[in-house]
Image 1 (cartoon, rainbow, N blue to C red):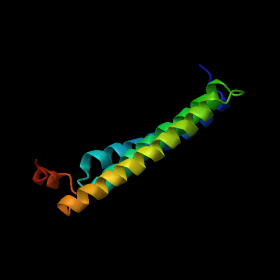
Image 2: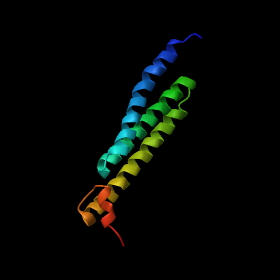
Image 3: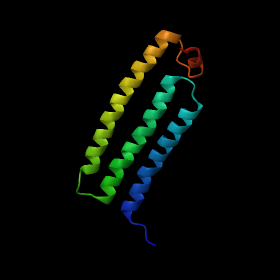
Image 4: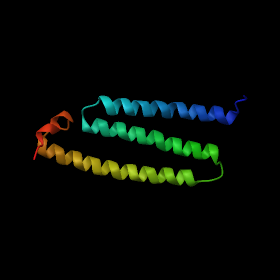
Length: 108
């Protein structure tokens, strides 16, 4: 099996996105601060967005549908981040803590 130069370029882009995604998963699992968890989640979403653009370029070089889907995903991620930060600020006003462990004190 012969590897072409396009596949080598694809691998050189997939390795950093894999590292980004794994760092995001590690941060999401190990962090207790909600802001750090949100940053880890955004890191995972950005790795996926880069992969969308990468595979669109690799599989359909002349089409731009994957690029538009990536832009749409970035816009959705920005809206999700704004909403999550608003929720975190509201939780901080109530509990005075942004640790996930401290949310047990917020009972009805």
